[in-house]
Image (cartoon, rainbow, N blue to C red; front, side, top):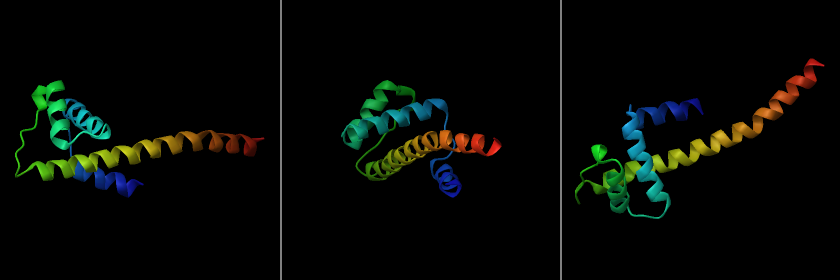
Length: 99
């Protein structure tokens, strides 16, 4: 998992909290079934300072980036959920070993 996270950090890069909020809004709209153009418009209305200008020549690349972020979000949620489920079992195993 560390290798995946390192690779994702390299692909996504450093982002400000405002950029993250904008990107999250785009991803949320994509999860709702919106097109990339609609998702960018929605996020641009919510976060105008981070609005992304696009055209027919670059919307495909922008869409691919946000599809990556969407999948990354899904993977990280699953990872967090699995770790939350596993943590109590690990703690109970440690408790049993200590007694």
